[in-house]
Length: 152
Ligand SMILES: CC(C)(COP(=O)(O)OP(=O)(O)OC[C@H]1O[C@@H](n2cnc3c(N)ncnc32)[C@H](O)[C@@H]1OP(=O)(O)O)[C@@H](O)C(=O)NCCC(=O)NCCS
Image 1: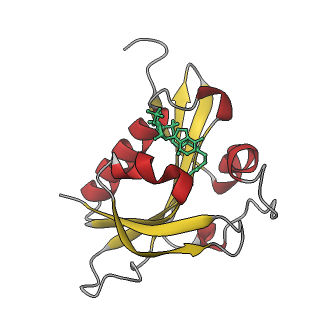
Image 2 (image 1 turned 180 degrees about the vertical axis):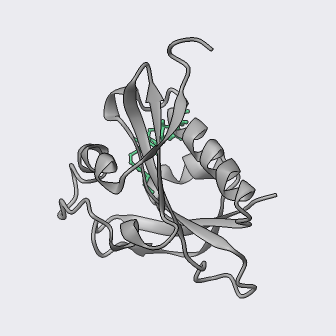
């Protein structure tokens, strides 16, 4: 494996905070980087390391999807962020795909997220679809849509 091949690593919630702050909170009214769901049972924090450097983070929280009447085993994807200096190099895509594969291996059949509209194209390229109307997220004041991806 080349030395700079991306590697998925398990993180603590605290290890996601620097990238959450730099990427998700630099232009928002809130600077809060702790999510209440971070410590929920089964929550996992996955990062992508390249040459030993953490370039992307994501959090995966077991939680029913609010629009899924079938109550499928579901995980909410939160805090998806790639370091500002290395965006658009495919790292976010690698992390979301590997994360979905890990969730599927655990029996999860639905991954959902409240996605920023600015990132919708990214998610649509990775098998997610938009559900319902857009809304303004109260914390960030940014426009969002709910998105879902069925696994398997
Ligand atoms: C969305 C994001 C996680 C994607 O990670 P990435 O490593 O850049 O993803 P990839 O390189 O695999 O895919 C790039 C695609 O993501 C989208 N994208 C790139 N930069 C973006 C940015 N600053 N904001 C939103 N989407 C972006 C584009 O569709 C891009 O395609 P392009 O390179 O052809 O223009 C990353 O850009 C990011 O952290 N954005 C800011 C924070 C954010 O919006 N997070 C999602 C919250 S729901």
